[in-house]
Image 1 (cartoon, helix red, strand yellow):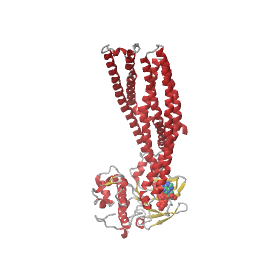
Image 2 (cartoon, rainbow, N blue to C red):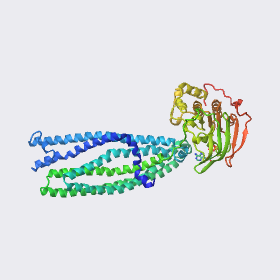
Image 3 (cartoon, rainbow, N blue to C red):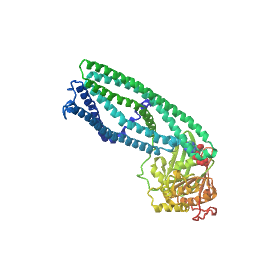
Image 4 (cartoon, protein in one colour):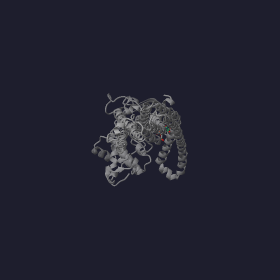
Length: 601
Ligand SMILES: Nc1ncnc2c1ncn2[C@@H]1O[C@H](COP(=O)(O)OP(=O)(O)OP(=O)(O)O)[C@@H](O)[C@H]1O
């Protein structure tokens, strides 16, 4: 799809989201038509009063006979006319209210569905996408861009459709009133449309720049807040202020351009519509002086022209909303157009893998940066392999490939003989549980965080996992035990405690393969001893692949595989002297830990 094509149809791409609401939208249209009918009738009582007061014929007035309904005297006629004006306003207002509720509500609902779809898609995009995109930018797309799309949809249903309906109805009514009036009214439309279309193009470009700059701004803010500890510890708020100001300046310039375009539009529109009113006044006035039409007739015509011009004015103001909506729609579409990884079905797969892992000629690159050049390695079920080697050699990458977080750029990683790229994600995630260097905890209770790996686990199973991972030790000292709520990102726990929650999570997952990515790095000796004690329970009877430099963890391994820095090729396998196969867990006396209830981690 070309850029321009994309631009023109960005919002239109979401039309499918409106399909379930076609009936309710039709109801909204019906309500708008009723409102319009009341609006069309509104000037007629006034016209009849003027004509009668001036002694002119009001036989052309469709409401004329109604005015005599409650008496033919002047007072009765004036009272009836005044009551009719109020009644028509009430009826129009009631339909307007109902129409707004139905139409705007539909706009809100559709935009919620778009946001949910975009978020669901975003979450399922491969890690390679998330590596490229800043968290702030993605957040800004889901929150702000979807908000702008919502504004456009609400404007579409609350202003554009009713506006077009008003313009068409008033123009038609003018034509029926007299073809000359009709032509004058219709003449205003192209003038307004031509100025509007040009401004819309300019506004769209400005809106696009503004949204891109706002997205980058959100990225900056998220990044500095994520690293707020570092910012504070080095006192570098000024640096972030400067970055923020530079990016803010970009949004300001684009915003000012958009405001300027918007401001220029209004006088142009005023001039265009003043031509219409002036022509109508001239032609109508001439007609009245020649006795072709009554004054009331002219009043109705002027009121219909005003009825046409007002929506034209609001439509032209919409242009900025639609420009922004279109720019935002492009940004959401760019998420929705990102392909999601596809994989096979679970139909012929066992519920639980044996845990055999094979790397055959595996290469992997992040973008154009190679991380692994060629890795051949076979791991038997029940083996505990420690991947070691210099920093950046690709150890964590190998673990991520087993977990299916990335796809190899060459070769294949196989679990029980099946390439991970052919396996359904959900199945793969049930076979491999990961404990990372820093366990991410979500806001919620400790129990919720443990249950994250298996939502259907019973409270007893959660408690057992917590017990085995030594979470219970510190949870007991918290006000609500496992039901204690953690702050955003799981704040309130020490590094060692977080790791133990991560281990409990992995224990509950009960996967045949366990992947440990430096789970004890950054912990002090005491915290490490506790985490290692918890890990020992996790690794029993499972295939384990770990990356670590810590002796306490290395002692758990049955085989050490050293990757070299030169090309990432497996160079030597150093058996640790423990038999592979039966793989008994040898516990070094130095790793034993006595856990007392009062102990922290
Ligand atoms: N998400 C990423 N995006 C881009 N490059 C990455 C990413 N993750 C890792 N790399 C790069 O890939 C290479 C391998 O990284 P990896 O983390 O697998 O090494 P490692 O052996 O685990 O290192 P360490 O011992 O420091 O943890 C490195 O050069 C690293 O800079």
